[in-house]
Length: 494
Image (cartoon, rainbow, N blue to C red; front, side):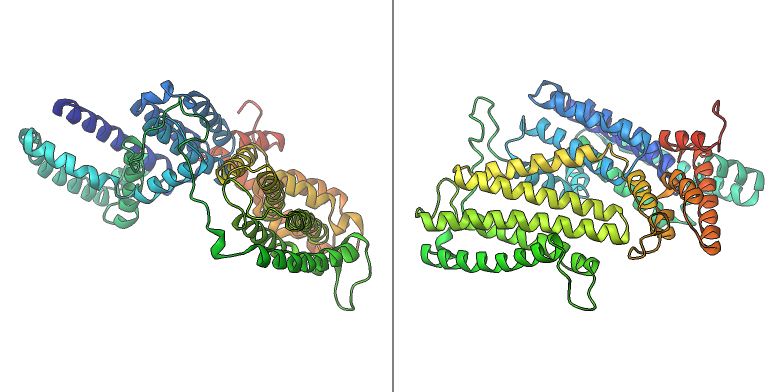
């Protein structure tokens, strides 16, 4: 790239970066986030595409761009952590495609994402060398012009700030437009916000990845993405592997036998212990156990062939994997029983999804071991399954599912005295999606006067909050608008 083109490219990207900082400040600084998250995400996507047009010419670029853009309606309808996370992964993947010409495999993809994530705060500093070179070679007049404008700009800002302090009319006007910078009253928070936003946007406009051999699409799938295999001889020998598999199978058999007796057959537990306590005690540790077991299995096999070739070990490995899968389903059963006793939460849904992913991972390990697949194949398949689940979850309203489940399975509805009492405080945390469920619960549940009063207070709070969010253009979302119309909080022609 010639010097003139470099100057023009950096200057244009600097202007786009400043524009994005101003937009982010106007939309988000000390303001509630609503559909504006989708608007800002669309702006970032357009900036990324305009700065890296080669995305459209790269295999896989258009489908990935479509999937990333499909998240924008989800963020406009109801922004949340998961859609934002998947959007950031999509943007990062588009940048990798633009710089690499494609994505080799899941490991290199994760490595590039980590590289960009760790350096997004320092990318502008590295480019400052380029700007310094521009200043030395061609920018004398430009920088002189900036210095001439700097002093009047500083005094203008100072006078404007003093006038807003001295004149209540000016102060009210700038407060209404949200144009006052408040640099003196809150300098640190706003400067940090600008710095983080500018650094992130600059790293999108000028990404940097570690140098590797360019990807050729003429290569066979998986070629050039070899992972070093673990030297299993440092960890196990055929004899020690056989002994360990015998011990592990015996331990897992004891645990699975206990679960079969108490959870699946319903044998009476020791005095002082409930089924909910038993279920909760092992729901999460058993998943960790299965993950550790999977890691041990992978350590015992090379990347291209089996370490052990005698039938006894093969059968013990198959038995142990089967026991691990059964262990995961026991953990799922434990969690379902705990949910039945103590209600459903978003974290418990996430735990159920995680347990299913672990079971799928164990099944993939079985395929990898007994069909002599490579470790890179296993990593790719697990990452694809994980991303597919996370992407699909962006379009699922989990808060509504939780609210509807809890009101229909509450102790006050079913009359089951072994269940815990209805958790009004958690329902309040679910936000506007709990209004319909609480209204149904109000007319169908057997409530004490205190609980009925608490429920009415929760409903009044949620309705007021929803109405305020819909009336504020920044916090407005399509989901909140439709809910407000449904519950008669705004006119249908609003």
